[in-house]
Image 1: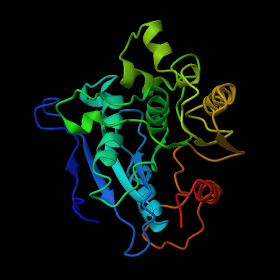
Image 2: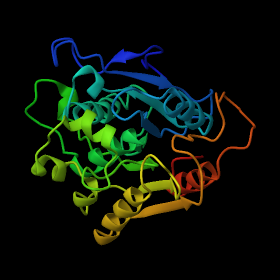
Image 3: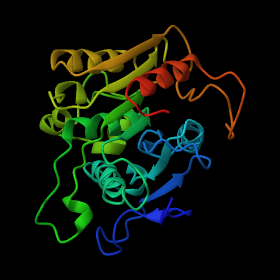
Image 4: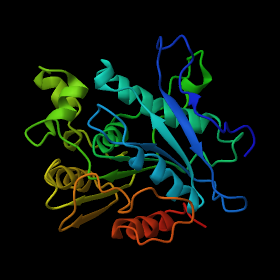
Length: 273
């Protein structure tokens, strides 16, 4: 793919925001397998850290399907960052891929975003708070739309209300967020008709993030008539990821059933060959 960096690259110019550590790392399909679709991957980690198995492993699986994946290293509460820093990074990632799509042989109308746990909350925030870009911006990337063309939410944190995962809420919003701020980033309250199609999965006995988060977001999408695919499995620990440790290209070990469901959903949306 012409011009696509092989190493992590800075998401923002050095001067804005100052000292921003955010990066994107590309994972490419094998020669001849690329579909032209791409997905930005947001690892989970309670907005305190980034779980590698929900970043690199997902990206390798997506690349195996012919989808170019970009793992996003976004700003974290553990480093003193608060909302909207994380949302700004996710939006910038989608804008970046869209801006460079021609150079990188990607389809600007097939750019998805995927996240687990707190990364799933970040996905839910972007699919409900995207914008069309700023046509007057000096930076051409900022002129691009930040709307993803689909969202994939894995055992997501959704609400910052009573259903909230407390550590994620604290890292995202600080110790005493206002009711207005909690409302603004409770994605079950923010869905809109233009939210893109979403794939959502969770386990019923998740002891860290309540399954009601996924159910509430699906209900909000239903109310707005946004297409979604919802899968609730009876059991499984939070953070299960693909269901196998240390995924590698071409891995033939059995993966969690959600992967098969996701593959079928992506195929139906034209993301696979």
